[in-house]
Image (cartoon, rainbow, N blue to C red; front, side, top):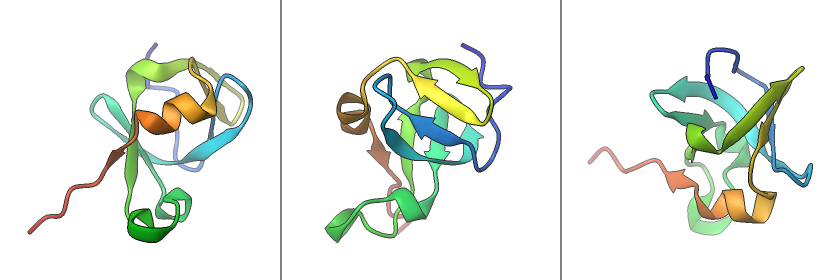
Length: 83
């Protein structure tokens, strides 16, 4: 699946239709999610990334993943600390 149709502020949903995040931008073969969707605790305030290989289709303003939301979240990578 090409990421060329994925734009900033699109909603990312799992195959089950559950919200996973909001696109900040595409970086290489990953989708960077906005910080507001970063979760709680130690995850709060960090960007997370979803592998573009999980994208099943882009429909309207939504990016639908091939995995259910709970599985997709397990593939998320946290932005590494630049220090």
